[in-house]
Amino acid sequence: MDTKTKLQSDVADRELSLMCGGPFYRAQQALGLIRPNEWNNVRRLTFAIALGWLPIILITALFNPDGLVSLLRDYRVHSRMLIAVPVLLIGQLLLESRVRMVVAHITDAGLLETPDQARMDDMIAMVRRVRDSMLPELAILFLLIIHTATSFKGLVDATPWLAQGVKPDLRLTPAGWYVVLVSTTMFQFLLGLGLWKWLLWALFAFRLSKLNLKLVPAHPDRHGGLGFLGLTPVAFAPVAFAVTAVIGATWRHEILHYGASLMTFKLPAIALVVIIALVALGPLAFFFPG
Image (cartoon, rainbow, N blue to C red; front, side, top):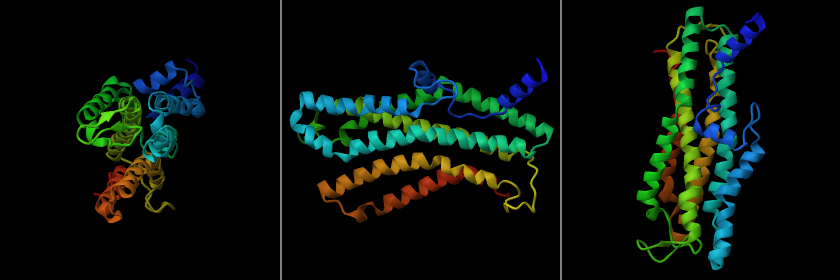
């Protein structure tokens, strides 16, 4: 192996990619949605909408045409499939680029001595192994199946396109079954996948904080040279936006159709903001001086 090839190999070994691996990534490759060094967001988004949203329209038009108007007006399903799902898919690239940039900067800035650099390389290899394992993503899917099977009746109402009858004896329409089994599962899986990848970053950040980082007290960023880590919480923004968009649509439906008061959601809204802040900023807490 010549020197140039060895250097390229060393650089590749020190790159941390959270998204380029795992069953979901490989499935997208098999479908031609992702190619080497080319994410092709237009194709991915088109496929997601064609699978998760368009069939709902077609099924309702064919089997329940009287419910078509109610479907077109139901912003709950549109918020999931036309807003949240695309945001989650595009957000994967934001998380990917931010984590790659942070890890590359650690090496380029010389924040680690040679022994600790070797430890970080081992950490990167460990994260890759966990990322590529089938078990976490299968576990997410398994939990979603259990959740859907045990709670879907409590999550639907007598909207003409979605279900008919009166609770607790609602009967799902064909489009309703498709939403429960496919569309909602797609959204929830992408959400779970985003949280799983963020957990991988948190795990890496925790292990990184235990290394002997060469800090500079007089560094211009006023954080000893670790100010660049403040770029990472932005990578969680797509997940937060997707969650709040879907929850907000649900709350609006409750207010307009069931007479709920806006103040009813005061405490849940505060709790949601706190949870998002803790999750987004949590990995940075590992670097606080003990």
